[in-house]
Image 1: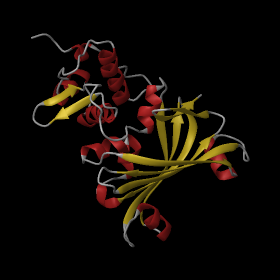
Image 2: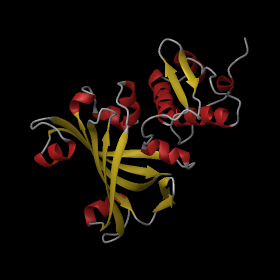
Image 3: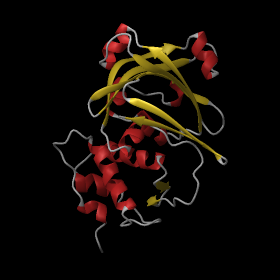
Image 4: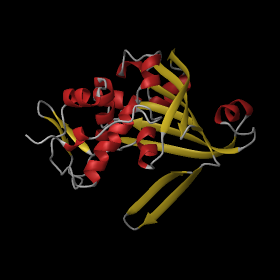
Length: 258
């Protein structure tokens, strides 16, 4: 039986690019080149682990990112297949990791704080939560090619992923973890404002206090309308450009990172 092309590739163990991101890149290249056609079966998790000498969590994170982009589809009991791009997938396909990887840049995150809190009245109102709901609150500096870009604080109801730990947030894409438990982003509302970065935030982002930036808020919902994510971020204005294209059929919005 002919060996799957993916298994003939190699990971660079000494690279700064995380192993799961390298695996994502390998599979993407084979799909974009046509070497893997729509409907082709990917190697199993066990085969990928054995061939590349990586953990099952690493493989699952890679497959989760590919599924989030609509490039592959998992069929229970059958395996993971190359998805048909002509089939419109419902929902939004966003994660910071996916966005940055798609630009050919290297994403990474530095965890600043992780806590489990009783949601404040403001958070309960924004996320449509009952009073007293426990939420995860973690703050990360999001880096691109090793340079800080975004200071991001995110809130998630604890019940959507009860056993989340600080270590898991440090080592995994949280969106990939959520995909494994069936939490899939369906719609998101974004709001951008211009701000002047104060000294504590500017220091974490590696710029001078008073530098211009963006203040970004996002509410993300599942298909049944539940808000499961509220994120507020401060973004360096010197490295990000926001482009909006309007035409008769609709509007597209692109965030470009320099």
